[in-house]
Image (cartoon, rainbow over all chains, first blue to last red):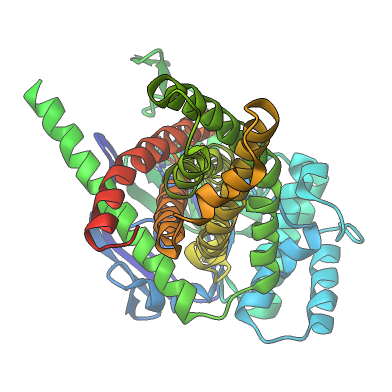
Amino acid sequence: MIKIVDLHKSFGENSVLSGVNLEIKDRETLTIIGGSGCGKSVLIKHIVGLLKPESGNIFIDETEITGLNEKLLSEVQKNFGFLFQGAALFDSLTVGDNVAFGLRNLTDKSEDEISKKVKKCLSMIGLEGIEQMKPSELSGGMKKRVALARAIATDPKYIFYDEPTTGIDPIMADVINDLIIHLQKSLDITSIVVTHDMTSAYKISNRIAMLYDGKIIGTGTPDEIKKTENPYIKQFTTGSSVGPIKMKVKAHGTDTESR
Amino acid sequence: MITTIGKKFIKTSDDIGNAFLLLVKTVRSSFSEKQDRKNIINQMIQIGIMSVPVTALTSVFTGMVLALQTAYSTRNIFNEPIYIGSVVGFSMVKELGPVLTAVVVAGRVGAAIAAELGTMKVTEQIDALYTLGTNPIKYLAVPRFISIVVMLPILTVFADIIGIIGGFFVSVYKLGIAATVYKNDILDYMRVEDLCHGLIKSVFFALIIVTVACYKGFNCEGGAEGVGRATTQTVVISMVMILVSDYFLTALLVLFGVG
Ligand SMILES: Nc1ncnc2c1ncn2[C@@H]1O[C@H](COP(=O)(O)OP(=O)(O)OP(=O)(O)O)[C@@H](O)[C@H]1O
Ligand SMILES: [Mg+2]
C-alpha cells in the first residue's frame, strides 16, 4: 500500500505540488490524469524517492520514505519498476543489457536465466530478437517499449508507468494496455499509471485520480469519473477547451491565458 | 546588488561543499565495494591511452622550447649555453609535466565526463540507475575516479620523459651541446624527491578534474544547453583550480621537504 500525506514541492518560485493526499491500494491500477506540466511526473518521482519533498510524508507498506537515508531507500526501491516518460534507456548499453540491468543488480540469477527472462520480457512487448541493437538504432516508440520491458523485468511489486502509450501507435498502445492489465491480474502487481490517453485510462484503471493545481481534486472508478459532476474533471476527460481549466500558455516569459 | 553577490556566494560555498561530499563518497565507495574490473579497464583506456598522443605532442614541444629559451638566456648572461639539461629536467618533472598533462586531460577527459554524465542526467538515465538498484556514484563516478587517479601520474611521467627527450634533441642537434653534458646536467642534480613532488601534485590535479567533472555532470540541468554549460564550466573551473592549487601545493610540498 502507498499512502501520500500532504505532499508539498516547489522548484524555486514555481510551486508544483501543494498538499497532495492519495492512497493506492495493493493490487489496484491507479491512473493519475492531469494537464501537461501539472506535476504528474514530479508526483510519481516522489513516490519512488527520486525527488525529496519540502514537506509531507510518503508511506510504502508502512515505511516512511522521505526521511530514509540512501541505503535504506535503495532497499525500498527494489520493489519498484519505473517506466520513464522519455524512456531513459542507457545509450552506452545494448537493448539486451538494458533490460538485464536490474536483473544483474538486484537478483542473483545466472546469466542463462537472465537472458531467458530478457527474451521473455522483450517478446511481451512485441520486440523479439533486438537484444544486440543499441538504443540509438530504435524508434521513439520502440525505445518506450524496451523501457517498459526493463521496468517489468525484475518482477517488481509496484510498477510506475509515466505515459506508457504516448508516442505509440493505437494498436500497440492497446497491446500495452493489455499487458498492464495482465501484469496486474496474473502477478498481483500494483500499477500507478500517468496518462493523457483517456481511452487507455478507462480501460486499465481500477481508479482514476485527477491532479490539478498541485492537489488531487478527485478520485473514482472509471464509471464514476465518466459520470462526474466535477467541472474540472469533466472538462479534462471530455477534452474541451471550454470550462474552468484555463491552460497557461507560457510564451517569452509572459503568461497568456487561452480559452 | 548585495543580495545577488550574497546569493552567488552562498551558491558557490554550497557547490564546494557538495562537490567535496561527492569526492568523499566516491573515495569511500572506491575502497569499500567490489569493483567492476571491465568497466575500470575500459575507462583507463579511454582516459589514459587515448590521451597519449596529445600529451606527447604538447610535452615534446614544451621540452624543445625550454631548451631553446634556456640556451638563449644563459648565452646572454654567461656567454655560453649552460645547465640546459638541469633547467629542462627540473621544469618538466616538477612543474610543466604535471601541470600541462593535467590541463590537457581536463580539456579532453574532464569535458567528456561532464558531457556524458550531463547527458545521462538530463535524459533521466541517472534516475533510471537509482530505480534499477544502482548507485550512480558507484557505477559512474568510481570507475572514472580510479582510472584518472591512476592514469594521470603515469601520463605525467610519460610527459616528463618526452619533454626531456625533446630538450635533448634541440640541445644536441641545434645548440651543439654534447649528449653526455645534457645527460649529466640532469642526472647530477635530479633527486627522487623531485619526481615525487611532480607526481603528488598530479594526483591532486586528478582529484580536481574528476570531482569537478562528475559534480557538474551529475548536477546538470536544462537539456542540451545545460550539458554544454556543464562541459565548458568543467574545463574552465578545473583549469583555474589546477593552476591556483599548483602554487599552494608547491609551497606546501617544499615546506615538507619534498622537492
Ligand atoms: N527538476 C526540475 N527543476 C525545476 N522544475 C521542474 C523540474 N521538474 C519538473 N519541474 C517543473 O514542475 C512542473 C511539473 O512538471 P512535470 O514533469 O511533473 O509535469 P507533467 O504533469 O508530468 O507534464 P507532462 O504531462 O507534460 O509530462 C513543470 O512546471 C516543470 O517546469
Ligand atoms: Mg510528465
